[in-house]
Image 1 (spheres, rainbow, N blue to C red):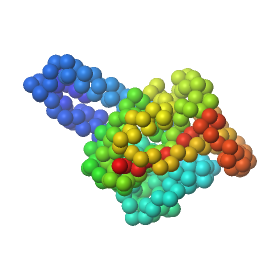
Image 2 (image 1 turned 180 degrees about the horizontal axis):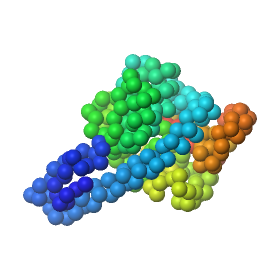
Image 3 (image 1 turned 30 degrees about the vertical axis):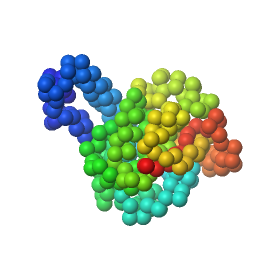
Image 4 (image 1 turned 30 degrees about the horizontal axis):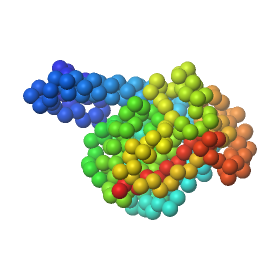
Length: 291
């Protein structure tokens, strides 16, 4: 926490949030006030998300780590998201990693060298248990403390929508971490969907969602970061199986029932794949290349 508003106590800062020392002579009173408020706001949002995930971690892993959830992500998220990328032997960061679901695919299919990063202690403990041969960092995606240009690829799967109102800060941090020509790969719910209003209402009233969750405005992000990235891929995905297989947790579906209907739901999703558009799809897959 910020002790006096001007001096930063490194030992008491949130895990991974490196807050610089600021003397009173370095900033005017108005600048100090704005910075202090911004830091406090960021800390609060990150603490909220960390506490939220720590609370639901066990249930989350049970629902998202079951064989049907893994199968869905492999076929409908990871295969198209990483299409055309040669990552063997490359340094890849899975940001907002949880216990490392994308890391599984990146290690086994892409043979990448993966580092996991998450602000949740529970998540990073799970990551270290699952992937003892990979680096794991408990830190913020907005201020990771990792070295400049240290990764060939940064991957975030269903994590960026947890970062509002600090999403822009996270994208700036990802840009800093990428080497020139490196790729930022992400899969997220998006605001262009016809279901966005219903989803926003659900976010506000369901205890499984934190207060700062919000789907992504892809067009707005592209305008904001057009000078930093070249946009290589924008593919819209997600229908029935996205809801009932990947996100079965939010519907409180028991795993025994999920196992029964998942093959049919994923078969239907494959059939509908050719009809996906921003309006009728629930998620977007993007590859952005650092300029």
